[in-house]
Amino acid sequence: MIRNIKLYFSFLVASLKRMMEYRVDCLVGMVSQISFQIIELVFIWIIFQHTDNIAGWNFEQLLLLYGIMMLSISITDLLFDSTYDIGKRLIRKGKFDTILLRPVHPLISVLGESETSTALGYMILSIVLIVSMLIKLHISITVLLIIKILYFGILGGFIIGGIQTIFSIAGFWTYKSNEVVWSVFQLHKLAEYPIEIYNRFIRILITIILPFAYASYYPALDYLEIEQNYIIYIVPLITIIIWIVAVSIWNWALKKYRSTGN
View 1 (cartoon, rainbow, N blue to C red):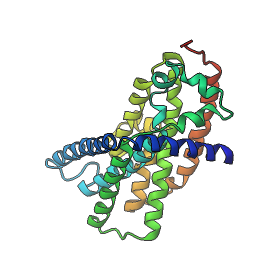
View 2 (cartoon, one colour):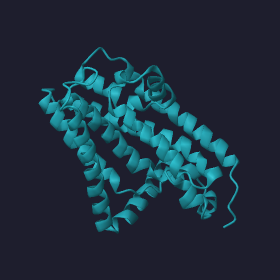
View 3 (spheres, one colour):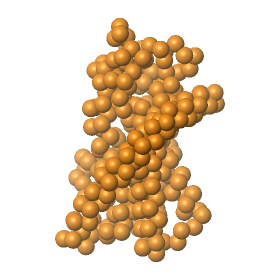
View 4 (cartoon, helix red, strand yellow):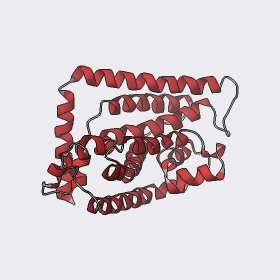
């Protein structure tokens, strides 16, 4: 396991170095992503021009929830972006066959090829939102709180990354996994709002089936001290379960792999 972790970070660093060779492209990607998220924030602001709260959450609390989710998304983008298009980028072009020749689990190689300029944009916006909303909500920014936010932000990123990894196996059959992974990934937006606004099916979807809520909603409850929140302590367990499932499903799908013959 230690060897695989070291190899993963070696692959990731190499990928990030390749990405940074095109600095203008990285900067444009980062700015465009921040601009897109600002548009979403404007949409939330428009909603609050017609109401004082959403399910008891005021404007500042909702922006804090949004920022927490963005922090997790930035971690996902940084570490697991390569799962998005393995079908089109690797399997269809025959490059996956090369990965299979390496003396390391193919999933480590795939994850290590993440290179996205959007991660930094997400991270900058999330930090600005979280800090500014904590100040506006008169919540003391202590060392313990900072550690908790970073810790659960990383766990949230791994939860979303695990979900992406599970659905990336679509590439072994469709040779183009983009649409499947993107469709599932977009469900994280449901966890940018309080789950109280949804019906029972949606709540079960984002807490049990696809547990996006553990990346944002439950940590936010703890930071805001809205209620006694014990669920946050099972977030590490949820993360472990997600990745056990993800690796198991990936290993199963790998046995079904057939080269495209490129």
